Image (cartoon, rainbow, N blue to C red; front, side, top):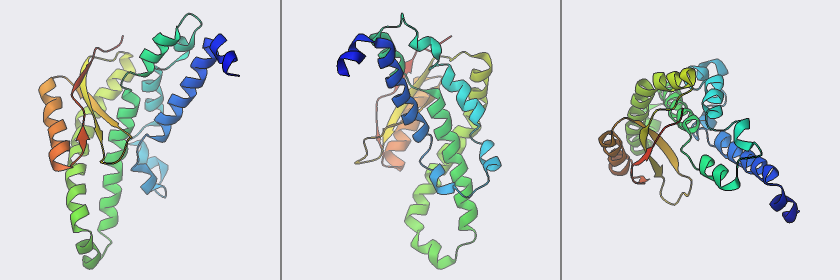
Length: 202
């Protein structure tokens, strides 16, 4: 079986593509799992499935697994920062913040007092993601409509003891990236990567 894949790079690329798509879709937003009982129409305002698909197709599509694409070229493509994943993370987290805020209004003062520390951290995180959503949702839609990804800076952040990195980007200037990365590190106590530059795609 291993020899079959080695002799058939197209089949290998398809397998890698399936794995990548699985990771992207399962990691759309860890926050969304907390809101399973909320009506789907409420989520669409924050994470539009059709928009997600359009953004994904800009970086993963049938052309990528064509026969003359080498394994090395394919590996380079799937190592790019995925704006579709970024879009769902920002929108999904902002949506979860709205839902949790509504739920907290129905809780007793005693329960809220017990959650005080986590609420303080969540408030900082929600402010960050609500600002990201308000500032960049329009940009994601422009990218999907024009089918052009502009150059941008981005960084990855990690929870301590968690190997799964999440991506935040679309910053026009490196200073914007550095400022938010520092906020993630200091205020939320996340581990962060260096700010990197993506050249864009037309």
